[in-house]
Length: 241
Ligand code: 4AZ
Image 1 (cartoon, rainbow, N blue to C red):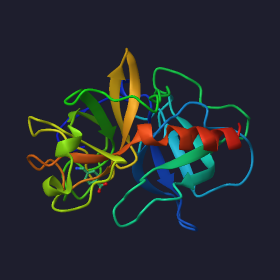
Image 2: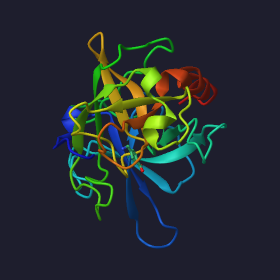
Image 3: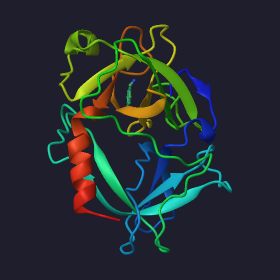
């Protein structure tokens, strides 16, 4: 997170970190944020190369509050476009040896999914979080989870002109800090853009891409989660716990 502040996982208990195992070497840590979507978990079997860490404030430090899961299966969206980043979304099914899902706690709590038709007013203030870089060219990721505040841009302003010509599709939304302070940055991708809707913290976006980090008048670009509710529910229904 560019700008923002160091935070505590209890402030973003739906934030996950993903660890990618190297094939033979010891584990290597890639702090891609991910969102905890309720009961997308459980069952036995296959040790994948991914590990999902919930409940951790410090990226590399174990904590009593953490819950760690292997990934049984994952789905990258069938129409993901590696050039434009259209349909930049994936779903992970968590695995457990003891047949229980993540347990709710102050540090681990699912975020709500929006209804497919939910549209929040332009300039609604939302929060982003992650263990990613402080600046585009920082050498390292954050040691501690950070949180920032950004506002939802009107669709008519969320166009390639403001993003150095990179195409923007209807599956994306723009959000940025009108003060020019906070933004998502490298390593935050996959993490949450969460907005309050009727007193529920609701996942409106998934951190996806941008033109650098924290550049004035350049929003961050997020996967528009309302376009994928049927896709998510379809996968979950076809792959019950
Ligand atoms: C990235 O590379 C990235 N400023 C994510 C978000 C933004 C820029 C880059 C938005 O993961």
